Amino acid sequence: MYRREFLRRTLAAGACPGLPWAGAVSLGSKAHGSPSSAAAGSWSPADPANQPKGTAIGIHPGRVVWVHDPGITTWDGDPEQGGWYEDRFVDADRAEAMLRETLRQVTGATRDAEAWKRLFQYNNRQRGRGDAGYQPGEKVVVKLNLNCCARRVSPTQGFYNTPQLTQALFRQLVEEAGVREEDLVAVDASRFVPDSIFDRCQAEFPGIRFEDRDGGEGRFRTLPDKQARIRFADPDHTDLDPTYLPQCLTGAVYQINAAVFKGHSLAGVTLCAKNHYGSVFRQTGPNDPHRGWNPAHLHTSITTPRRPLGTYNALVDLMGHPDLGGKTILYLLDGLYATSHQSRLPEKWYSAPFGGDWTASLFASQDPVALESVSVDFFAAEPDLRHMDGAVDNYLHEAALAHDPPSGVRYDPAGEGQGLPSLGVHEHWNHPEQKQYTRDLGTGEGIELIRV
Image (cartoon, rainbow, N blue to C red):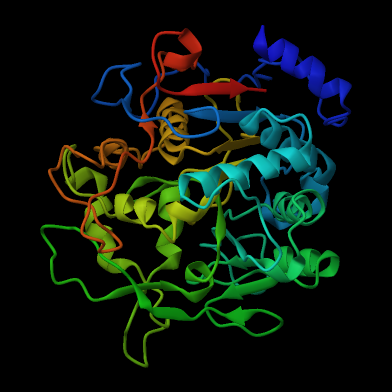
C-alpha cells in the first residue's frame, strides 16, 4: 500500500516522466529464451535467510532502493561496433529520471531539493554537527570507480561509472542540492578520469574539479594527506607501511560513494566498500608506476577463498574511517551495466528479472552494509559468476558487528583509541525470486528493499 501511494504522489508531483512504470513494485522482467532465470546461483551464504545482524542506518533504517529500467541500456555487446558508454547505447534522460526517483525513495521526499537537504542533515546529525545542511564553501567529494580507465576512451575498456549517470549526479548536486561547482570534486586517486566523463561534465559544469593519479589535460593530480593515516587492524600484518588518504577527501565535509556493480577476482564483489581501494597511498620509490596509490598490501585480507567467516577484513577499516564512511551522505551503485570481473566489459545477466538482458539498474542507500548485502544476494543469484567463491560476505558480518566482530579484532581505523560501532545491518533475502528482507516481511529490523 505504501509503495502504491508513494508512486501516486510522486507522479502527481511530476517526477520521472520518462520512466516506463509498470507498477511500483514491478521487477520489469523480460526473458530472452537464454539460460533460465530460475537456475541455481553461483554461491550460497553460510548463514540462514532473514537473520539480520547489526544496527540499521538511515532516515528509513536499512532501506535499500533498487530502480530497474530495462530499456535504458541498448548496447549490442560488440566493441567493434562501438562502446557501451556511448550516448546511443545509454538513454541519458532515463538515467536522470532513474536517479531522481532513487533519491526520493531513499529519503521519502517528494522533491529532489528536499531529498538532498534530508541527506545532508541526516549526516550532520550523525556526526554531532547539528541539523544544518550543505553550506557554500563546504567541499563535497564524489568518489568514482575508474578502475578500467585510461585517459583516452576505448570500446575495449572494462566497465566504469556510466558517463550519463555521472553527469546526472552532478546536475542534481548543482541544480537541486545547491552545491556550488567550485565545491565539487570528483576523484579516483589510483586511476584516470576518462574523456567520456570529463568532457561532458566539464562542458556543463566547468567549475567542478576532477582529480586522478597523474593530473593534466584539465585534471588535477591527487595528493596524499600525510597527516591523515588510516590504521589497519590486521592481526597477521602488524607492520603494514603507513597508509594515507587523499587531501581532497580529508579536506571535504561530505562524500558520495558512487561505485559500480562489479564482480572481483579476489573479493567476489567490488562495490562501495572496495571503491576506496582507490583512495589509499603508501610512500614508494620513484619507479613505482602507481605513484604510491596502490592497495596491494590490503589484498590478502579480502581474498575470499582463503579468508573464512570470522576473520579480519580491511574493507571494514575503510568503511568505518571518519574521513570515508563517516562523511558519506549517500552510497550509489551504478548497475546500468554489470560485469563479473573488475576488468571485463559489461555482461548480460540471466537471473530474475534480467532474463538475458543488461542489469539496467541503480541501487542506493544510506546504510552501506545493507546496500552491499543486497548486492551480494544479486551476485549470488546469477548462475555463472565464477569469482563468487568462499566467504564473500565475511566483511559484511564484520562490519555489521564492528563493535563486537566475529574475528575479535578491534577496528580503529582513525587511531582514536576506541573501536567502531555497528556500520549497518546485514542479512540475506528469503529467495532470489521474491527478494524479501525482514522489514519487507514485517518480521524484524533488518533490510527494507524498495523496488521500482
